Image 1: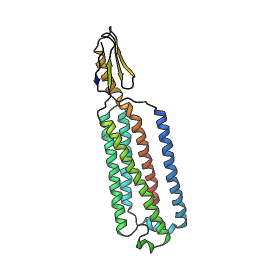
Image 2: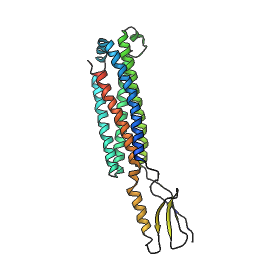
Image 3: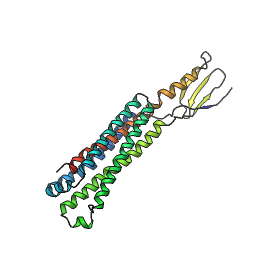
Image 4: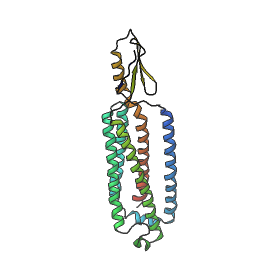
Length: 255
């Protein structure tokens, strides 16, 4: 007797955690090279125009920069808590901390928008009529300021999008198509859409065992399948925070 049915359980996929981590670290290395080149460029121009850089840094809002620093440091904490809860298979709290991390990122962008708007209203932006009347060093400072903080802000936006995807995958109810089939009434095989055997029933075993197998799969494995993705997303977010830790003193504290 043949029979077929479909039930819900967790998603299935190939897991290569080591390869995923290595790939993420290689990507982060390219990001370090990108910002490292900009930091080197900043150092060269600062050595050429020390007085102009000192003067322009005094015009930046140090309080706003400090608030943004606290925001990003707090977001790193919530990101760590999200990963820690997912390791404990607590998807609910992992989702909450992922959402909190995204909200901190949005708050950082709002503060940066307010800060940029104030500078633009005063005509302090590249190629503005007011700035063209100032020294070359001041023009270079604001060009680097908008370039480096703007590129960092773009990375924040990308990080929020990545975390939003992770939030959806962690918070949503997992699904997986499973086929229950048998060649006779005594032997039952439980397989997924890829053909992997998940559970086998023999005549001597109680049929209730299949319910236990499905419950185990749903509660034990769903967090593990998302953990490496969330960990890599966290590494990216931490890198963005570390970059700001360097940007903050270079532009706001050199006075």
